[in-house]
Amino acid sequence: MDAPSLDIPELLYFGCGNSPSAQLHQHAFYQIEFCLSGQLFCKSRTARFALSPGEYWLIPPEQPHQFIDNRAPYEYLSIKFNSILALPEHRGSDPVSVYYLNAILDIIRNAGTISGFSPDGKSIIENHLSGILHHLATLSSENESESPFIMAIREEVCKRGYAVNVAELADFFRYTRSQLQYRFSKEYSGNTNLKRFMEDILLELAEKHLQYSSMTLTEIAREMNFPSIYVFSRFYKRKTGVSPLKKRRKTP
Image 1: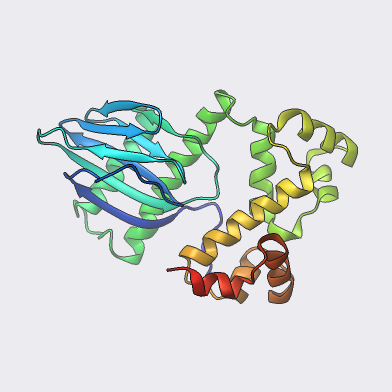
Image 2 (image 1 turned 60 degrees about the vertical axis):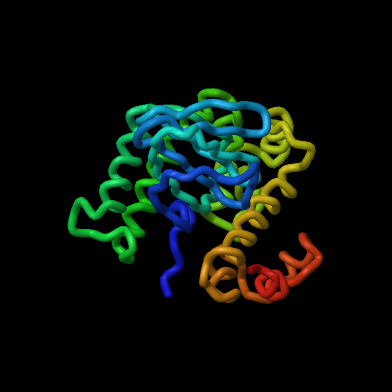
């Protein structure tokens, strides 16, 4: 089977609804709620707010959220998906994102000839999601949630997978290794070194493939540019303490 591009989100669920969620909850994937009519009352761990028609809320993985019944008619579009991009929570109604969301809505409602449940429809929705995420990544960079330099490192590691090392990354940015390490330490807020940061990105990708994709372990290893399934398995077990096969068996 052909493996999906690492740049394209993996669609997990879509649908329109008009019912609230029972309690504050969280999950390991992204979610977008797009208000279509009425007002969608929302709650995060730190805030309460309402979405009006044309406004959306991007909810990152592991962020607690809840949708509250306001006893008035409302409707929303809900999309759940995986992505390699690390984006913060975002609420807005910018024209670019709304354009893509309306295009997704047209496919879901079968306004054209392509069904959202078909392989072609799913592929188009995933490409529209990619447009939204890359647009919001630009907005996030401008807001300095993560510097453009750190995002460039993240994207390069995601594209090249296990095949890239610190020396090759330094060549890509036209730095010496020490210059690259120095700039990384200045711009990254986390408490880690560059090599571990790169490994953490690979581990995050591997976790998503294991949990949500139908690829075999050999296909995942190939997709992430590991030289063999054995190298991939050793890497995953070193980082997590369990083999990728055992992890997949535990995944519901």
